[in-house]
Image: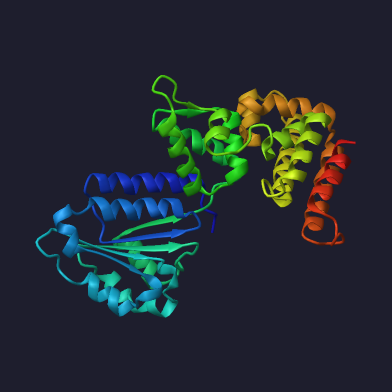
Length: 349
C-alpha cells in the first residue's frame, strides 16, 4: 500500500474541518497516526464547538483509552442526548485499547447512534485497516490518518500556516525555527503563535531577529548558521560557532548538528545530480526537486563549485561515521565539542 503523503493528510483534515464548521457531523471519527497536531485540532474543535455551553455538562464526555474498555465506550455512546440534538464522546489515547477491545466495538460501529459523535484518537498508532472495526468506521464515519512532514516540507508548511493568519516569515527565520524544533507541528505552532502576537500591525513578517529576541535561538549561533557556513566554505564563521557550542554544549546536541549537516550535503549531492541529468530546468523547478525555498538555491549553486559530487559523497560518509562516534562507537572518551571540531575540520579541509 502506498505511503500517505502529507498533502493528502492536509486535504483530508481541511475537508473534515469544513464539514464540522457546516455542522455536518459523522457518528464516528477515527483520528490516527504519527502527527498528533491534526488529531488534537479536530478533537478540540468537536469538543468546543458541536455543543452549546449549556449542553456540554450532560452531553460531553472525555475519557482515556488506558482507563476504559469497549463495554464502557459502547454504553456511553449508546445513550440518547439530554435536551440537545447531539452528545459528544471523545476517547483520547485510544491506542491503549487492544485489538480485542476494538473487536468488541464492531457491533456499535456497524450501527452507530446518529445523535452521538464518537471520536477515537489513536496517537502514534493506526488501527489495522483489515479489521471489520476499521472498515465499518470508514463506511459510516470519517477517518483521518496522519503522517509526519519531511524536514523539507516544514518551511512551506510554516509559510502556509502564517498566510492564513495574514502574516509571513523570512526563509532564514523559517529554517532557524525548523532546525531548532524539527518537524513537531504542535511545538512549531506554539512558537509561531507567540511570535504572531508580538508582531506590529504594520509589519506582519517574522524575522530571525524576532526568533532570537523572543524564543532565544541565536541567529548567529545555531545549526542553520553552522551548516550554511560549512556549505559556503566559511572557515572563520564555522570555527566561531563551534567554539560557541564548546562553551554551550546544551544549545545544540552534536547528533542534531550532524543531522542538519547531513541534510545540507544530501541536498547538495541531489543538486549535482539534478544539474547533470536535467539540463534546461528552471530555477524554481530545481528548488522544488531539492525541497528548498528558491531563496536558498544560490547557496547550493555556490557550494557545488566548492564541493564536487565525489566530495559530497565522501562528506556524507564522514557524517555517518561521526554520527556513530557521537553515540559511543570507537570514540568512548572523546568530548562532543572535540568530536564536532574534528568533523568540521575534515569536511572543510
